[in-house]
Image 1 (cartoon, rainbow, N blue to C red):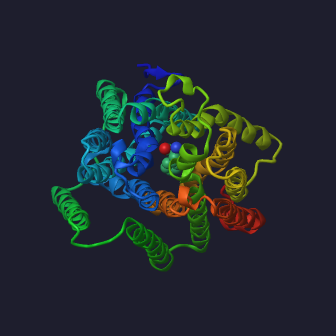
Image 2 (image 1 turned 60 degrees about the vertical axis):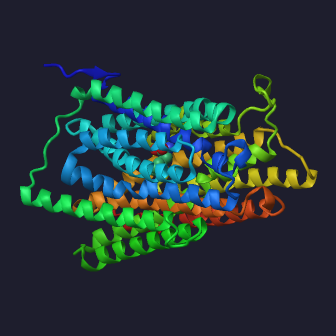
Image 3 (image 1 turned 135 degrees about the vertical axis):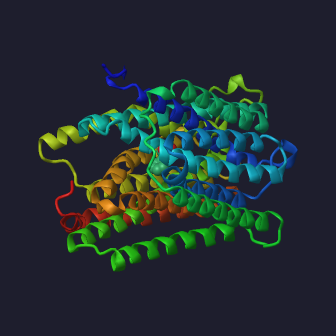
Length: 495
Ligand code: PHE
């Protein structure tokens, strides 16, 4: 029988495409409001939290979201299978967003924790299912399938701030969060109704004892996590968001250090494998450095949009004459949708001429473009400082910054994941993919700490601090380009 098709791809891709589109709609809709809501004054319905604390919480939240992809993959592997993990993860995400909408500060933070668990369960498993659809198909089709899937992510990300951001900022924060939760439900209904197109769940054969043991480990893990959350929430452990974020960052670095150390010392790697794993270590730090700057999107840059950008364009439709600050978060995903075909074609064309840059060069270029984005925003901040009290700059500055950041993302992000899958010794593939997510997580977390030094009260220092990120990011990028040859040698033929 002919398999059902969608755009020439397995029909199941449509199921996963739309589920991830709605999930990212929820995720980025909520992210577009997060810092704005936490820093808004209590009289304006916000939480009245300082910018330093709010951005640290933002980084901690995003870092945890991606770090929890590790246990999320483990749960699907051992207990639920991927299809159920996606369903369950989606339901948890929706529930978490409804908690955000309750309007009580403690419940709000609980909601963030719930969203972390839900995304951790859904995100790695839905991506793995895309790969499974192409198990018996040629590699080129698989790449095309992932490209289409990445479009779904970014279509959701483009629409989210326009809808959820506008409702949240202009109607009420709670309405925005509730809407985000509702969109996830739409995704789930769609997933449930078309789930027959997904590959039958292949139960991983595990003995009942093994399942029991995994279940026990899960319950213990969740209990420890819940105890930690309760200790912080009840004030039994008094810790500020900034120091909690710093400790978590340190823990992430230590975990990576011990994980790689363990693999090098006890993983019985051949010398060829050891060299390739060394490259993964480089990519881990490359990803962390990239996302450290890139993820200011929802924190530092959104605050810049709110306080220092002239938002009168289209302002006529709003009571205060200003378009929402959250709208700027639409730019990155929009540019991804517009430019990823261009980049894909560019690599193909360069490949034909044997000029396609190597993985370390693409990484270096990604970081350098991210860094250049900071030159643009530093200049904009300089104009604000020079202009004195009340000065606002044109939206074009943020537009250019986001454009450079998107070009950087397109050089680095899709390439990183596939390079890791190719470089990892087969028996370590999923753990190594996990470290890629952990590198992303570390970068996200650091971005929150950095954003804490870029708030409105620090605007005098903003130009220098933005430039500092330019020097750090650009320096690492340049180093990668300069060391590309020896790094490529370590890769041993992997392209
Ligand atoms: N826009 C991407 C997404 O939401 C960002 C991302 C890159 C997330 C890499 C995780 C890892 O999927």
